[in-house]
Image (cartoon, rainbow, N blue to C red):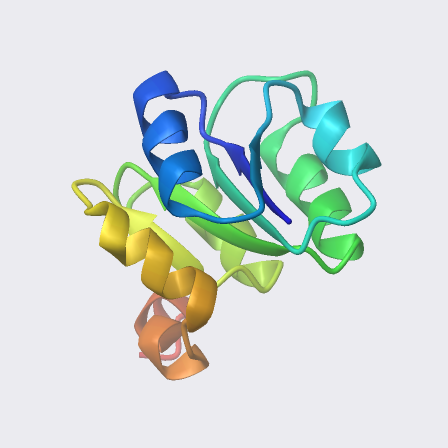
Length: 122
């Protein structure tokens, strides 16, 4: 089951049409209560949890996260990488980018530059 939690109605509908066994979600507690979810497609959106706490709880359930971010300068990128979220799409993006990530997760080597910047190994 793929949960779609982007807060963008058009994007949610477009993704839902292209992803079998998907469900659009409108509130974070549903994500945390869902027992059969394998993947969460999400963007930053205000809810009762802060980003790091919410994503920690999602990852604790072994749910793969595909995260949509505005750019690679947002502070949440660091938290996402620390939580093992490597499937990150930056605006502008194509639906195909997300669909590919469902089937083929991003490798560590593809996000290593972001991680180097965070831990200052470069």
